[in-house]
Length: 406
Image (cartoon, rainbow, N blue to C red; front, side, top):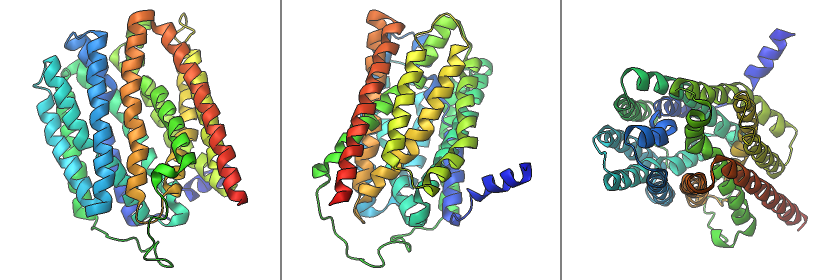
């Protein structure tokens, strides 16, 4: 019985090209090294002694840079190819992370975070486009899931390692680790993966396919982006307000916060691929699954209203993880499915920009609510926002179902 279950689990990982596996390895190395992000708000608040409002503004610059980088990455991927963008982005951002530790003024950090994220987030839409080039069409959602697994496994290792580095070396150690892993990851990618201009898996029937409609007229896509924005705002609370809440409400150490995030990464690693494979096999509507994910995310934030028992943080993390496994892989897949051939970069740029905007709003709105009304008000607001996102996603479900009838 156990043997059969094991082989069925392994079956989910078959059928990927060599390039997809290398891309997955590179993503894992890169994300395992991203130790700065989960502790950034703590570093700014506790080490550099900025106010909540200043931390919020630095995170706004982080998000604005991320938005511009996402747009540039998608635009340039369609123009000069995803391969060059990926190499430039990771190598340059690695060098920039080395320098970030030496900037400690408020104005300097605002500018530095903006510039780093412009360069670093050019990688994301380019990476999504590379999946379109290196994965077979029938494997694309699973390939996205495989790369997301690498991200989450990296996040599982990263925060726990980050917590240990802070306790033993200090925050400076994080910047060296982050920059070094960016550079290592892209060197491996450049050596092992050759550039591909066009996918051998697409464009066979219609090689000259052109954009038949403007992305700005795709109504279901834009409403869906609203849901993505909301799920992003809720999810990024894990890296902005929640680590501060752990310390101030329950007096958790950096290592304990890191271990809670590690729990999230491990669960995603073991459960997401089987869940995605099951949904794909049974042809369950992707938008319906994203709806369910957004609803679970709202519940996870409402659970934070219970502020007298630290065990609620584990239950909250379980709901947030379930929500993430439903919402994110199928959001990526839905966005890619709306894009005409040859214009994936444009769609994925706008899609990734919604998450960059979520970074801005998640930090700034969350910090301002906490500064003025306290943590409880923030959890209530975020939970209600999640219910709004669920309603918007249901609207997209209605619109896409109506499209199929014509």
